[in-house]
Image (spheres, rainbow, N blue to C red):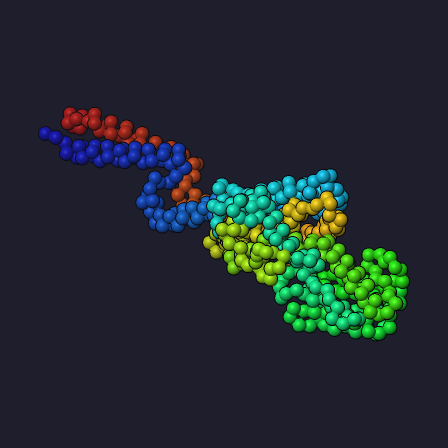
Length: 500
């Protein structure tokens, strides 16, 4: 007959030993992994908290990856901007100190060097990171700036800057080479300057003043505008002057001053006093024609090149490049829109007119975004490319007596555009805005590091274990398990005879 009490006790003791063995295995796992449980269910009421904490940690990890990626892009953009500024400074030095020597060529050494610098400038603006062009606005897969060769020379079917400059030069000089002005004498003592058409080309009359007593000035009036100087009074005395003021195509103004002289061999800028006001007027017209031709073929030609550069480079989605409405070009009266079929588009990126920074936005925190986009056609960058390209594009003739004057007039203008003139965007302004984005990234990164540490500590307190406590539990459990096993062994050895 069996002993029911002993059998039942033995079974319970064995089950308790198995439970303790399972518990011991779990504690050993905890000691090895440092985790309280292998599943959220094992965490009990803390499982919801754990899920929330892990979600926050994953978000922070994503933000940190974004910060790292955007940080690299910003570093590359700042490097590119530094290169742009450096190139501008170097070309400014060339413009300031370049000597006019053609040496049988059509360009000076400074111009040729600037063409090489333009290559470096274009390469800087074409900077990309992991396949993303950084100065192309929203079209990050599109190289932002055309090749230097296409910009200067065109691509065969499309006109480049050199052709635009040549066409504009013809339009501004006019057929007579006097800057689209006509000199006439409607009366025996009258000298009239008239713009040959209502157009954006050539000299624009501003006015005239004179120190000659009795001179009558009229205009400019009419369309086309006309300006008349009447020497109706007594003959001028030596040293007295007549000064004409003109506006040039690039928006600058220049004076042309003619000084009366008793010499029958007047120097440039002088007119001979004749025996009568009528003869003096004839001499004034001859001197005006000569001086106007020189001014047109120096200052006007330089201003024309700058204006052509603006026509070619100052473009966006709403403003295509401008071309002279011709041929013929020397009698043209309008500017027309260049098209994608006939004119090189120097900037190939996103050419919308909204804030360039908004073209690339990264979320670096739950409530913080950083704008860091840029376009190569922003004013400061465009002016730099435009100024260097114009200097590299203009050519001269070794037999042109005005070539040196053209070069001087052009370099004077380009130097101003390369020294960060007031009231316009500078490259440093773009760098400053991007630096603000870098500061925001750094602050967010530091904040995420601190938050991540706090969340990790909290998560560890919920799903982690303390090795010391687990060790104590293992020792206690091992002792209990050993005692239980010994008791079980004793019970298994008990029989009816021993029991009685």
